[in-house]
Length: 233
Length: 233
DNA sequence: GCGGGAAAATAAGTATGACGTTTGCGTCAC
DNA sequence: GTGACGCAAACGTCATACTTATTTTCCCGC
Image 1 (spheres, each protein chain N blue to C red):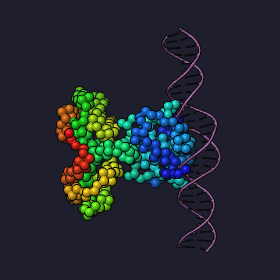
Image 2: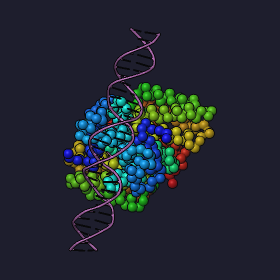
Image 3: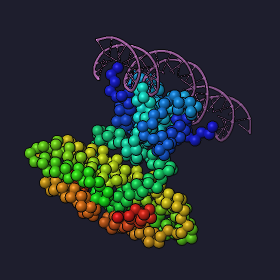
Image 4: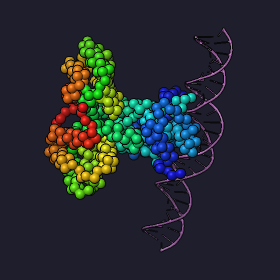
């Protein structure tokens, strides 16, 4: 029996979770632990542990004498990193990417403003360094190297905001950036204007100009929305 | 022994979770399943299910031959509703309330802007209704009734944004509003200016004035930050 | 025929004991 | 001192029996 995860429950989880988030089991569907145990060829114990986790994500609800029922989409914990990952890997990836980008557009400018006030010298240095790295890799089809610097830049920015909630969204932003590069495969080099904006943000944060950092970051995120055709009608 | 949850695992979870988020077990502490089973007087099965959920929140990490290790705070899934609830109920409630308020301040204006574009007539009606309810209960120590309308107003606003991520933050906003009223006990009636702003937001959303809805909501959230003494140095 | 309550059926919840598996750590030989 | 070896501790998994809550069914009385 091959073991894809760090444990049987993890393996079950990584199968059932995506199935549910992909809409393979529509809300209201009932799954029975015995059937699942049989299907995955594991004991009921393992199934129960996986179901507990799915339940903690509000993906399913377990009730006695009924079974494990899939909950409606609106009740899912859409902030759970695993749910995000599963949905990004699934069919409604575009929808999810748009939701996340809108969220990012609201968060990152505020984070940049806070970073301008709270960033440590080390964080300022890291920001500048990664912005420089973006400049260096912005021409000549070095998209992968560019992505590394881009991701690091935004991770540093969110962390430097000093707000734990913002900081925990770096996975989301990283997923957006990675998705952008890898999905609708970019043959063209990054927009030079965007690169310049990153350099300017690093500068604004370093000099403590919160308003400017916020506004510049807003321009970056607006650009990200434009790429996904998220328009104002 | 009273049964606080819908099952033994829930009871264990509601004990262990708060203990961890309250810092009662410092990061690095190892808990053993057998000891926990003995302590809570339940079987190992129950403990394992509870630990699975804590693990899914990144509060702990379970490793063979080692035990259940408490993870450092930075790794916690701070967006998990239960983690938020536990931390709000614990000792660092003020810190958590500030984090959440900053997050709200970034989110709600954007949500209001989107709501102005996407809100259905029913949602516009609900907004106006709750704003009116706030006006009606804003004088004469009707704080509880006011809170109900205030909460409903913001819940409707976030839902009307049409973004699922924003919509799932209504619990957070509700927690902030409830905390504000219940915690530093408000003897005084709500700020009339804030009440007016809510009415104006409802109006802006109804007329589809996104920019105005966003700016007015920003004023509301800035007011909320001012109440918590979150200042710009 | 109808309503209500008792009983049966069902599926999750819990307990228990045994065994497997990984892995930290100490020991021993070189 | 260093490396290999092996023990033991803790979690991981399984099988099974039993418990409990909840739904459904069905029978009885009106």
